[in-house]
Image (cartoon, rainbow over all chains, first blue to last red; front, side, top):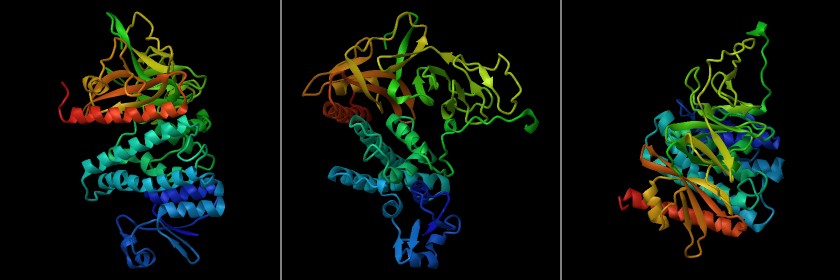
Length: 219
Length: 221
């Protein structure tokens, strides 16, 4: 499986993270997204006329929607990451997979504006991002009241991975995560998963690593 | 938030939202503080500024019984004194390196931070169980107007109308970029079941929209 990837893209990170958690191996092909704009060049447009990344190519299959890529990786390598135990679970999974697109346009749009100077109405993007964060927070509170720590069930699914990166990087777009205690706990639970990988701006939990003890002679 | 001559307790967070080995930013009238819980479960509050390079300690991490700065790992104990400087492993940090601390209580499922020197304990929340905390972009008056009842001396608003049955515990209000914001803790009757609690959580979302709309339109009396 070949992933057309950009290190700073939260959508590409979703795919790398899902693969790491599912134990799937990806063949990474770096795309010069910025400043080169390679995703809008002839080679990548022939794979994805929509001009976006990530793109996953596996034999004859070309996937350009990150939610579909997550579902494909999970179905192939780790079906326990699909929340399909009941009609409600399947619907909740689809609900949050679709919802993740709102995080991309709002929080992701604010982040692109702030980091790569893309045009956009920053205040409107931030307001839409805050509305989405409040919806996610309320959803997580309700799940906790149902005895479930993640968006679909009591274990993480593709829906959590789809929503996590743009939420975690909200401060890049000038949107604070301080007002959301349920999101904070959820983010910690995801970052504590075995096999979790980082991207620039989303770090592992330091407290889970052993205390580094340098000898005096090494300093 | 009962105020007396010497000080009062501000409810800053729900105990359940700050498990062991975590640190969060919390707001008191003096500004932001770093609220953290040690591995052994002890709660502590300190100034949100590392004396080394000024980094927010609420961005840091808790390992064992110390709060560490994310920047260079300087670590502070419950009493605020610096216990470790990783770049100088052989050094016992001098007593003078310390962060200011606040008295803090973990009572009734709520974490309370002392402002001044309160003469009494934090208010009792008998019969109530904390549900969630949320931030409302409005001041106290707008929230009281949306709830239809004023807060009592402990900062509690009890709403029992139209099948709603919930309590709001108001923290202090702070100035924000867009105006004033207030942290509110939602409490429900201790015996209530999950469907009632989910309904209460949804009701408070509606109350927040009412308070924020009124506040944005300048309709608060």
